[in-house]
Length: 165
Ligand code: FNR
Image (cartoon, rainbow, N blue to C red; front, side, top):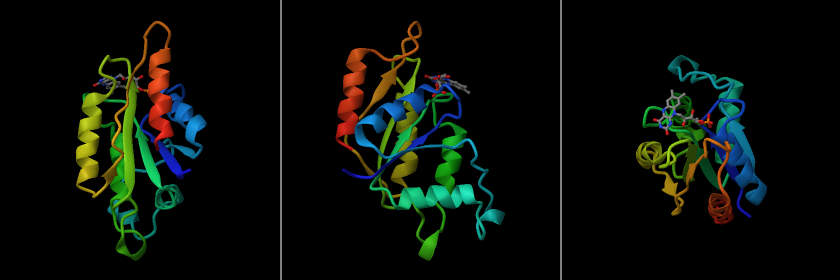
């Protein structure tokens, strides 16, 4: 089984995206990482980065696959997630950024029927210029506003997506 790290783009306690990451973790194992304690990218901190940054880098470097599980904010990638990617894109051990050449999957949940599709397109654009290799499957999760969760068919798609990671 490959070692997977799930990076969640929402800081919300009851985040649907965190729940989505945890559902996939039930299938694949691995680790769910939330960015609540992340600091803003600041080049002044790069020489001696905060522990939260070095911990994230280590998790990414030691993983076989990163899975970005994120909401869509204003049709694009939440700033929290972009900030974490900015840290991962910068020189690190032997001047090799943690994210370069990694394998990554992108998915997300929202209340919209297109389930974060616009965010995913933009996120893939950012990751592509960092030389990330993409997992070939898509996953768009629509949350039912009345039940506050996804339906059974969607759950099957989530499990199938996770099984291939
Ligand atoms: C949103 N939301 C949202 N949803 C969407 O489908 N497309 C969008 O462009 C936006 N834009 C947006 C901007 C901001 C600032 C917020 C706070 C929210 C709604 C979003 O999908 C909803 O709040 C989800 O519940 C967020 O995901 P989590 O926190 O539940 O994981």
